[in-house]
Length: 257
Image (cartoon, rainbow, N blue to C red; front, side, top):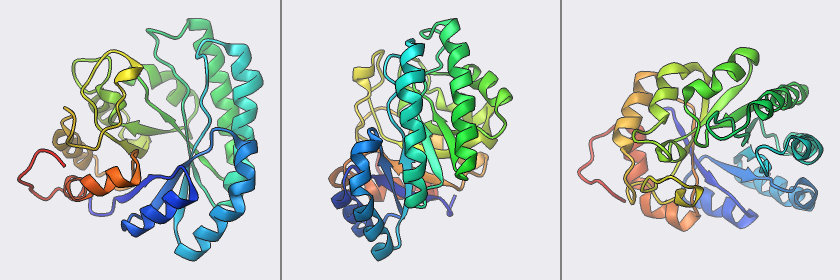
């Protein structure tokens, strides 16, 4: 896993500079409101040119996961607005939230969301962008149909989300069943739990997630792509050495940051 590239979330241009100073290789930029983000594009472009930094994109939030009308009239247009911005910033990977957990999302909504997902991936192809759906509380079976129906759809495996609403981290199921679909990884810690409020986004080592076991599983599938630390820059600084050891597979003598 020596070829894994480490990056961090950048919520501002200042964050991009901080991530670069930490020695990371890219920034993942959330674009939740494309129209408000547009004026910032020249600033991000200037930083990109100055630092030689790569950018990934995290798309808008979906809102009510069962409100199909809002998904079509609000969410989908917002995602489409992101693509021209991505093109200007040379972004080639888009992570999206589109909750597909069969326990909580209505059957009719799941059918509609599959069609929305197809439209997003089709539009992305026009911009040479890879779309990665991010796991929230889903397990592997929830993504079987989307992956079957949309061959070019990839996945952002969120190791933190995998710890929620379950007894055993669900990330292992995705790694085993869909190794070829995992294009990107989100890394953060928590203490488990059964609510979205338990998604604490702690520095790795401050929660209960067995990252050693997860990265051993990733090594078995020869994962060598990108990992975003979904933390603030000062939190990344605290645990960067520990995360680097996890990624490289070198033995370490501690269990926290």
